[in-house]
Image (cartoon, rainbow over the protein chains, first blue to last red):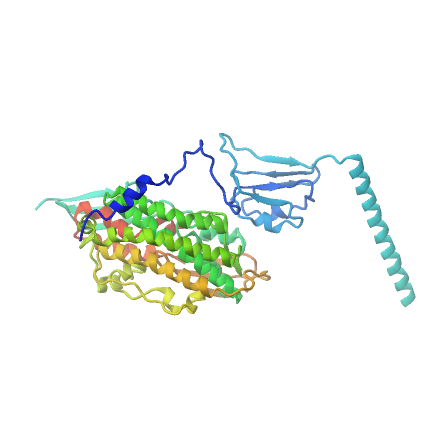
Length: 148
Length: 362
């Protein structure tokens, strides 16, 4: 039995800093791990659509013909499913939260137009790939005719 | 003698964090009978197994309840692992128990705060919730979430915690527990707290057994039951596990059991951090649950024993998933504690069983 058990703690609290922050004057601090929002590095994205398939809340839409990647941030539950599934690791979880809004909206990111140099590099890579396939095919045909 | 009157209590009531309705049959100021009614927040989450595959359903299971979120994802994962005969890496088992015990600390702290608020001790309520922030910060640093952690998955855990970080967690918990022991003194020794809790909402051991009470509510009446003592998962590697029980069976005993369990949880975390083995913490899961196979699993949630059942049908969707939550067990005991109590004690009695209605209704 007794009383005044919290007196010591109360006196300590008088001289300590407040446990709360004056938000929004003082900005909130986030940890490295905080699940804030999903960011997409569209330059590396190959628009494969795996993130769209894995998303449990159908928040992501990938449009390959238009080359756009869309996310409905109001539906996203920050579960990391897309980040883990991405084969190019172009999706990332950023620690800061998105701002509150008065209307539901989506964020669409469009793949940027390629520069002349990038276009040339892409064409060269495609050409090289086609040559490699043709070469492999020719080698395979030669092997088959030899066997028969 | 007065006339019998029926007073509706809830679903909206200042003391209730969640919607529960009681029809209180009272005579003068005494409650003769309490008729409970639930069903205000039913979301049909068990049925969602037909829409979400067994890997995605972890996310749904976690959202059954905001307080025992990690526990439900753990219970679900353990059931699916039993269903598909998956062996979990040892490090993952340890990490799971560490997170589960941390969520027990945060749940009990929250409840102690609510209890303090219910009997009108605002300062104590704030101090409890201030200390709870330590655990929530640990959650945020290790998993990225404060309440919904998304840390547990079928086959292991999603994130690893480095050994140095685990030691840091233990140091922070040690600091927290020094402050917590001051609060413990208030809960266990303060005259005003005792006057509000001792002898309130008594239920005997026999009645608690008959009503199948579980968790701290049952243990406060002397029932020796705790799933942790069977040593499932990393609990089996503990050197010693002593049950915290009381024979008083009143509101004070319930707060005592929960208050002491916080210290026990910190001790469990410390022991597991010392013993945690290195190695993988996750694995890739292939295949689907076999048709006709079923599995059950039990887990000691902060509120008591939770029972999980899952049945496979050969596809990636489960045939059936069922949870029996601790509060659905404890409601019968709660009704007994209400019989014969004063009308003014009803809010406190309802609170002392730590009802979690969103778990119960799913």
